[in-house]
Image (tube, rainbow, N blue to C red; front, side, top):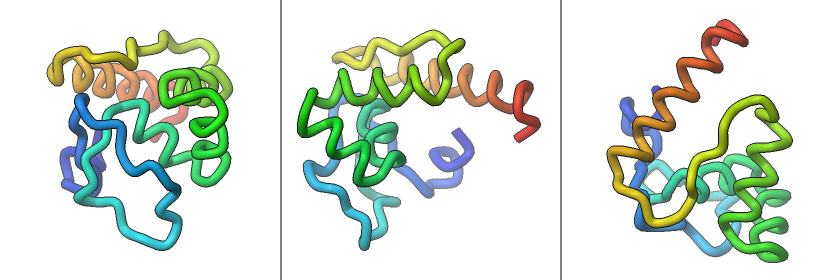
Length: 100
C-alpha cells in the first residue's frame, strides 16, 4: 500500500497490466490491478504463470505460495475501493506478522 500511496505503483482494478515482463523498465506509472501487481512483482516466474494459466490463476497461485494463511481477493472486475481496501488490509496483516 505504501508504494501505491507514494505513487511508486499505480493501481487500477480494471487493467491487468503489461502483457510481457517489463524487467528492464520502470512500472511506476503503469496501471495494474491487484492480480497484475502480484504477477509483476513475481517477475519472469509470474509472467510464465500468467502465460500458462491466465492473470487470475497466476495471481492466485502466487498469493497462495507467498501468503497461504491470508484470504485471497476476488481478482475479477470488482470496484476500485474494494481492491484498495483489500490491499490495505493485507498490508496491515503483513506489518503485524513481519514487522514491516
